[in-house]
Length: 483
Image (cartoon, rainbow, N blue to C red; front, top):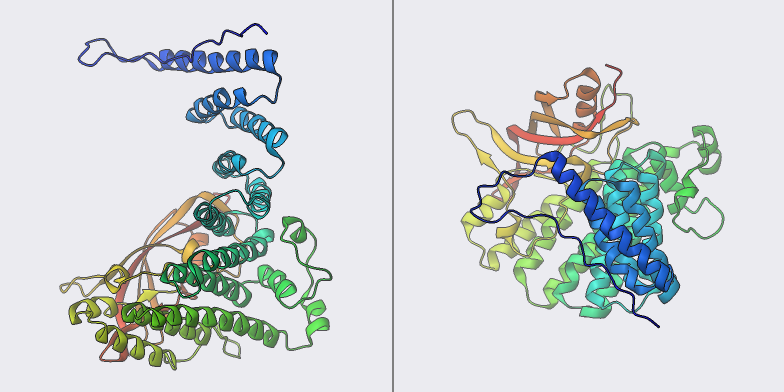
């Protein structure tokens, strides 16, 4: 067969260092880019004519074409090039080959950038199937991939439609469970390397528990799944959430008139599951003789007990959310034990003071390996008395935490808020200092969310301490208005 002469990759014009030649204009750069794309397309067309549409030689120019198209945000054309790469991989190596993973991840990023979250959901489901069915990847790459999947689902909880929140939360839990199981096989059941995976699994259970207790429609969907109301085995799919929802009367017909009791029971069960995983983290550190790690695990056990107590609703009719008790209760026993373990581990009093002198927003989203790493951002100004707690993206630290169903914009709402933190970790005396965009709907959303914020209180001499004039910069979706 006669060899096919391939055109060399087009190269964009570059200026010579030290040259006085003027930089190319926007029109010239656009022309250069168009020629670049045309060159890749011509090379792809020639290869297809010579070798067919599924030849491996097409992968390199398709990757270059995709990169060039993404540089100018030509998303539909880039998706076409990615789809062609996927077809080549699937035809030559099978439907679930691991070589297609980077291509699928690129599709995820494009769909997310375009705000096409239903397509993100479909793509995530396919990517999870690839990881489940392909065993050719090294274990460390499998673990990394599962963690990426979980992160995508966590992001989608905040961005996708309300009807898919339960799907993403349950998939997050599923990915964390699979990652923990794989990490245990890889590292061993007593390895400290396993601890972060078990902690993340506990964190996913906490997110699901909070959604059961704090949300409306998502709570119903999660109850259907965790309480076994639906027939058949659950298989995570957005299509499960496309149908209608049961009314309160229909739920009561299933559970009885005390539906809140069912919600609380399911919440406590999921929090107990989370607590058992945190106990496992503590046992891992104890078995390896890591007293500092054991002390940190005890602090997180206290956090879990505190959240379980403080998110229980109080009965009665109140103008605002009433939950929990007026004191931290049994959580303080864990906190005292944890601080005692950290002292025995040789952590300095100065470091422990920095670790406990300020409130910490719960749940803590990452397991740190040392107290120094775990010290929260906290700056106190003596002249003003303000305790600055830094910046927080509440979409990732409270899931999801709103009773309403706001139609959000891609641009976030940013608010600087000031409040007091009581000894039970709840806040009061909220004052919105700055907010952008500033409108009534956004102010209402900030106030509703802050009613549900929960902190680990400041601790001094083994006792919870109130914090006055705490300040926090929060980011969350802005409410769409007709202004």
